[in-house]
Structure formats: C-alpha cells, structure tokens
Image (cartoon, rainbow, N blue to C red; front, side, top):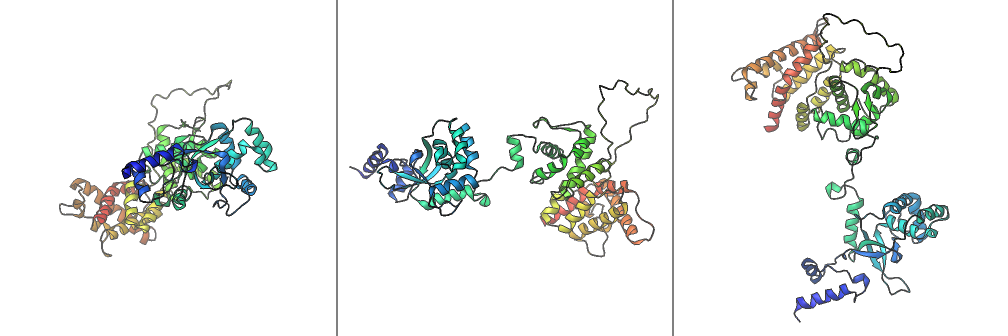
Length: 469
C-alpha cells in the first residue's frame, strides 16, 4: 500500500472511532496530514464534549491551584459571576461563537475519555449547576433549582481537544490578556457599545459628539475616550435644561434649541471638552456652575419656555411693530479653535504651543481681552520661532508678503497675504503695547478674534512646512 494511502486509511479509522473518542477527531486536510507526518501536535476538530465527562481546571489562573471541585465551584460563584452567566445560558443557551478548550485526561475507574477544561471554566461550571443544582453550595442551591426548572439539561458543549498544551495556553492568553498590541481581543468601548445597542446611559453625549464630528469641530481620534466624561456633564438636570434635550428615545435624541443656538453651544462644549475644562474630576457643583455660564459663553439666550396649554389667561401678545428691529448679529466670545492647527501642533509635539493654543481657545476674550492679546502675541511669536525666525525678528517681519515673500512659498496669493499681514501687524502691536505700556493696551476682543481667524490658515501651512523639512 502506498504511504499516502496508508496514512489516509489510518485517518479514516480514527474518524470512525477505532482509536477512541479522545483521538477520533483528526484534521484530514492536506495541511493536517502534513503536520501529522512532521510530528506537529494538532488540536482536534470541533466536537461535542459530554458535560458529564468534563472536569474543572484545578490550576485555573482565575483562582490558582485548588484541587477540591467544591471549592472551585464556590470560588467561581462568589468571585466570577457564574450565576449571572447561568441565567443567560438558561435563556439563550451557550454562546455558539465560543468553544471550549480541553485537555484529555485519564479518569480512574473509567475506560471512557475524560477532559479537563482549560478554556471555558465559567461556562462549564454554570452548565454543571444548571444540570445538577445539588452541586452548588447550600446558599446557591435554591436559585439554581429555579433556573434548572426553566431549561432542559445540556448534555454536550462544543470544543476542541489539545495535545499541545503550550498552543492551548497561547490561545487562552490571546483571549484573556487584553489587546497585546493588537494580537489579542479588543473589547468594545462605550462608543461601540452605544452604536450596537443604544441606551439612555450615554445617549446625549453620543449625539453631541456625532454632531460635532459631522460639523468638523472634533475628529474621530479626538473624540476617543471622551464619551463618558461628557455624559457626566450633560446628563445633569442643569445641563439638560440648557440644551433642551429629550433622550427618551436613545436612537433619536432631540434638542429644542434652534440650529444656530445649538451650533454655538456645541462649539463651547467641544472646546471645553478638548481643553480639559470638562473633565471626570468635576462634581455636581462644578457642573451646575458650568451650566449657569455656558449660555453667556456661547452668546445665546435662555431656552424659551414651552407654552402652558393649561394657562387659562395667556399673556396677550403686544401689537406688531411697524418696523421691527433687525436681529442682533451673533458674535463669538472666544477664539475659534482650528482642528487643522491642533493636528499639526500634535505632529510637531510642540507642547508649549499646544498649551498656549488650548488656553487661547478656552478663555473668554470678552472678559479677558488683555490676557488674550498677550497670549495671542506669545503664541504667534513662538510659532514663528519654530518656523525659523531668529530672536530679533518680529513675526510680521518674518511672515513676509510680496512676490518673493515667505507667505508666497506657502501658496498664499498676494491679496490674501496682504490681509493676513495686516492682521499680524495688529496682533503684534496690540500684544506689545499691552505687555509694555502702563495704561495703553488692546480692548477690542472682536478684532483679536477676527485677526486670529484670518492668520490661522497661514500658521497651519507654515507649521506643516516644518514637518516636510
């Protein structure tokens, strides 16, 4: 008989059961036969493992060496939430996406193979107690008897048997040891959990972050890890009232604010979230104070009360004015944060500039005009130095306009460069005067905000050029 034919015949005998249940699941693929020929131990194919032939793992890393099965069961119940798992199994059966990992052992007084479960001890323990509640410690038996009455006995659980114990340990570590730089299992975070199963737990913050990302106020990477921190703020009654939020349907959170008001409030919230003013250390008092000032910071009015349909004497409307005054234009009280500028500063690891810019976009320019004037000057001056300016060169002299000027090398056209240079000159003059003169200084916060908005795209280009050098 040719060698290949002989090997395949041996494999077929194994599958037919001539070598016993423990050895009867063999990989008959070409790769499997190759590994058998080379003496490489292979895990079995998936098979139904009889529950009454499974022993709990005495050296389970969850509890360390315990040789008494009753002690193992008690530990798993008290410390590993096996009862909750048993309730889930009683309702939904065992998870078809998860297999047991077992090692075949010899059971004294029996010719049938037995197995020690290395991967899946909680599941096996839960099934054992559902099948036979008397195995549970006395204080748990009544609960397991009630569960057992609701479910048919589970005779088998799918799994694989491993002869190579190190291979089994490798896969166990992949499951239980966290991310391991991407080699292991990555759990879903709060964002992923909400996308999969929206609940009220994080619904308001999730909707705000979705809106902010859509509007370009925050990037996908910047919002990571921010959901639960933001939810702690916006779930409080004071913030709910400011936002006019309705989260009764977690999949469709709504706000009673106008689009314009909501955009202004969202800008402030995102800026404060990224700067750290909104943080996990804030208590209820901090959040109440924040809610009391956010409308002023965003330059929006209080949310109008809904009409009271039960009011028997509604307030009469005043007669219409023949020439109603035009609405007051909305103005910002803070320097608008640029995500592009934040990203390039991060790439340059410019910690000083990151800190300066965070403060500039966080502090109200309306009530802190001189601080903002000096801070803007320091930020632009330091940016110019990072781009190559020497200590004696002012930033208007460094960021030159003209055909052969520095701004031309960034691809900025002549007319725009002129506007930018005028803004740079105002910011330089205002910052210097505020720093050095006893009485004179910058008092026009709107001009500072406008000038910073004008020069920011140029700063992004200038700093990006440093990345390319």
